[in-house]
Amino acid sequence: MKKINVVGSLIVALVVLSGCDSKPKEEVKSYKYTTDVVYKETCLHCHGAKGEGVAEKKSPAINKLSIQELEMALFDIKNGGLGQSTASEHEVMEHNMKKLSEKGYDYDIKAMATYIFNTFHPSK
Amino acid sequence: MQSDNIIEEVLREIEKQESVLSRREAMKLLALSPLAAGVLGSASTTTSAKAASNAKGKIVIVGGGLAGVATAAKLTHNLSDPDITIIEPNPKSVSYQPGQTLIAAGVWQKSDITYETEKFIPDGVKWIQDSVIGFNPDANKVSLKNGTEISYDYLIVATGLMLNFGAINGLEGEITSSGENSIVKKKIGKDGVYSIYFADGAVDTYKGIQELIAKAKAHKGSEKLQAIFTDPDTAIKCGGAPKKIMYITHDLLSKAGVRDKVELTFCPSGDKMFGVPEYHEAILEQFKVRDFKWEYKTNLVGIDTEKKVATFEKKWLEKGEYDQDLEEYTMVVKSQNVEKKYDFIHITPPQKASDIVGKSPLGSSKGWMPVVKETLQHVKYKNVFGIGDIAALPMGKTGGSARKQYGVVVDNLIAVMEKKEKLPAAYDGYTVCPLITSLGTIMMAEFNWTAKPTPSFPLDPTQERWIWWLLKVYALKPMTIYGMLSGRA
Image (cartoon, rainbow over all chains, first blue to last red; front, top):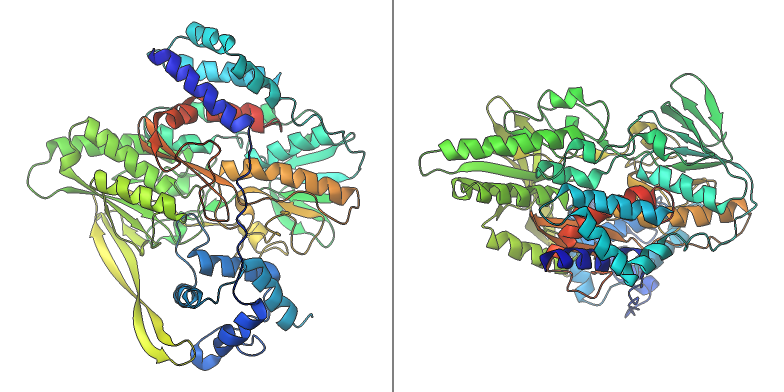
């Protein structure tokens, strides 16, 4: 009986991996504020009206970063790390972001990266 | 054809474990199952449905590991007149790295995961056995160690990553998982210091665990032996492996009856077990059941292999001043070095992009090659794509990620070759981590950038199951080697 189980299980497993690539349904999340509102009401205090950074707050400039760099950084901040279990490279901002999310200032990563780039990058 | 190979390999794997069932019985059962026939039949037809593109151009692929070879193979199916060159110095570049945990467990030998590159270079693809030492994407050229230059119309960067043992004080070397590693082996693979992150290291780790068992058997006194498992602060291949080796050590110690003599402690740089909350919770429970200890934000920075003392940097956040704008207290990062004595330590090395890519115009300040994370196209050079460990992508540096990426690269590259504006395919960050929780059980952690479990099968993904162990030990390797590497699955 055990032997049949082995092969039966394997067959099931093969089905899983070769055939049915059913995509999980994407959850569509809606946000309370637009990226513009989130930036102006929160990020701006530390990252500046032009994304230039504020020295006394020790907050870095974000106006020279590419969309890809912004996206990676925001992913790191919001997910608490880029790897499967590595720590965030932005520990302080990760903490702040949690507080901001609790207050409703959440955003889509790609949308915010695009907003910051299109609004502040010198090439724009 | 391919599905026959896969079945043949599955049978070969089963055959090795005669106690489970004989080859004849397995074949009989497989033949009896119309389901199996259907599934394996479909595996070889799904990709050939699409008509081959007549697009032309010279494609150079740098790197002949799983990602590079699978991409080359699929390109040969999808282009009517392919012109593809793979540049790869290592004659054994094709290895099944997920098997390194099983080598450390004593289930497999090194020969079970090592393959000759030559046998997997697809028909019609040119292989240059040399190393790229420079990228000049503005001139569409790469330079080789032998002094020649190779020009291309389209470039795929699939170099993999470097295991940076040298970043830890007291250790030396920057190596790949297969190939030359003598510099690292000066200190790793003996005297209680081990790493499964390279194939030879995995072989030594099995011996190391046996030594630990022997030491535990002879151990007297109330103080336990200390076994430490590290997890660095860089992106790494297979985020589960630093924990898998801990489960394996636990299991082998338990079977030898000496688990109570050894304390097992996990020291990750991070502040959680897993980036997906459901898996994090499941792993925490598994840790508690096994009486594992853990200390978060404790990153290995140095080791004295003579004295058997490891130095860790511990980090924490402290409350700073009140910030009017944030309406919260600001946080200040604090850190302190602590020393720990060990009898056994498993090191997951810090990992980085090779400087040849990282410091070239294709690289970035962090080294990893920046690509649009969905299309896998380089952010600046539109005729360059990145795949596998070298790409700057969140979460996954696994064979499972590469398996989902190579089809995306092929479809999008062909669209670029056909001068199409829009790239048709998008990667969603899928990664799979078959987390070995004992010799005989696995938790199949599948997820993507939504950081939620994305199971392929309607079974609770947070449970440890025997079926996933069977899948890992008997089926995943044949499916990878004969399915993925031929560009068909």
